[in-house]
Length: 186
Image (tube, rainbow, N blue to C red; front, side, top):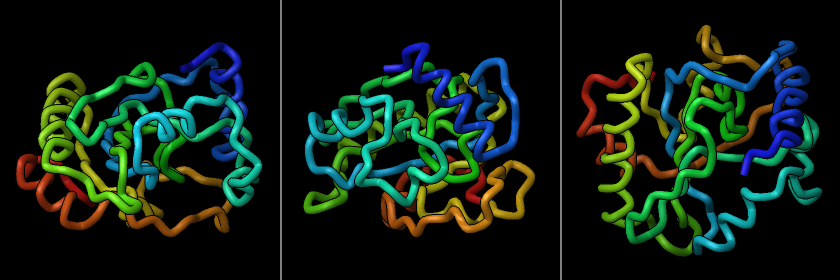
């Protein structure tokens, strides 16, 4: 999923959005961000994330760069976890926090709700990441990213580049957080 071209496009995004020149797209994970795709099946969700270039229909976020959105993991309704990219490469999944976060996308959230199997898979995945990367301090839902706007981890040059997010849901995050009292939400 991450070709050399996509790495270069990600570097361009980092320059445009954060005004940083980088030699690579490696991150030190400090935040895990939970999402839902808003697309109710695996194939269509993967097909949305797979292209290197953002589709023209996403014009609002296209102004920040043309590298497509991405995530480190994709979780299907039955709890199957798919690894989409290197865990320490920067993914474009959350405004302002990409340089310090790992993104987990869950299929659904449009007409179909997230499942208990997805919750269990997220618990296992967060546990795995928390144990592997001792630098991880936060576990947030995508809808909470703006709470970090004045936090040192938040980077975004364009003060007008913000979106309103609802994913995954407060209930899903509540149930997930019960398992990780040591991880902060903000």
